[in-house]
Amino acid sequence: MKHTRKDVSESKIEYQITVAAEDVAKHHRAAVSKLARDVKVAGFRAGHVPPEVAEKHIDPSALADESVNRAINGALVELIELDQIQLLDQPDISVTKFVPGQTLEFKATVEIVPPVKLADPAKLKTKKSAVKIDADEVDEVINRIRNDAAEKVTIKRAAESGDEAIINFDGKDKDGKSIEGAKGDDYALKLGSNSFIPGFEEGIVGHKAGDIFDLPLVFPKDYGAKHLAGAKVNFHIEVKEIKEIKLPELDDTFAASIAPDFKTVDDLKKDIRSELETRAAYDVEQKFKDDLLDELTEKSKVPTPEILVTDQLTSLERNFAQNLMYRGMTVEQYLEGENLTHDEWTKKELRPAAEKRVRNSLVMAQLTRDWDVTVSEDEVVAQQAKVVAQYNDPSLRQRFESDEAKRQLAQQLIADKTLTKLAELNSK
Image (cartoon, rainbow, N blue to C red; front, side, top):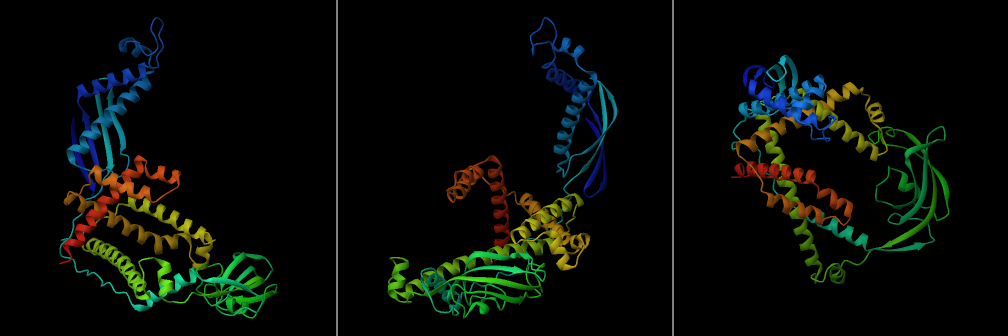
């Protein structure tokens, strides 16, 4: 094979390629052998027609396409290995000369992963935050445990703050139409929890089981669901049941009920603090790694190929739309609430995030190559076993046992190893 190379940009190369005559002939013979399987000739069994006989019965255009494709693919594989490039997309191919079985010349324009010029990964300024757990955080967990273990007793008196109210509610607009995301049946609401908009829980206090009433309210202007932000809504509420929540006493008996190893409340608090510190340490470490990567990317020279940015834009918008759906919103409603067009949203929010993802991923890939980070089959299998063990559902377990899942786990392990090394280099 002979070729010339023209670097159009950092991420685009144009090749002029002449395939060696013997390779053209080899791929021609391979194409004949493949297509001959479907050729039917009198006196020969299907699939056993000799190539020289079969070729006379094969559609010339089909044979040309098959042999050209084989020769081009073979040449490109050889070229990629020779120039040590990574393709971003299918090459744009243009055949300039072809004589069946003898000559093939073609032009290939390829998008490649551009070179990344890294700053020194061992001289970053990002520092790891300290892990600190205060008494309030421990108390919050204890209160949550007490609430989970609380006894709930149905009562006939009027609801008070701290009680649990079982309600049906239906939020309606000025025209009396139910509003999406403002309705619920048999909803258990702890009064005073501030989990609903201001005025809602306060409006239930003082009512008894069986009460039916309307409660006009205005949603906060900064409410998460933009179609409800600032909206005037009339809630039609039915109180079905009021329960008094009786929390268990915070004493040694309560601590022992949580786990046999806990003899005192102090034992329980120490265990909670230890668990919180472990989680906080993990979060701090992950943020440290992410911040280091961001700093390294910012200090490095990293191109952003548009083809990769486009892929990330598609992924980001799809994920954002899915998250909105869980909140009862559409992208259109979100954009309307933010007073943005789709193009403005893309330019203001999506594109910067997409470009950052692309640059970070290219830096990660370069680090992985520079440091020759790899994972063994045993490491991947061990991680796969850990993930599968977390699921009881056979269908989910099977999904994580697939070859694709295994490949993704390997990539994640390599990324984790790379970021861990980056953190170690900057932890001194």
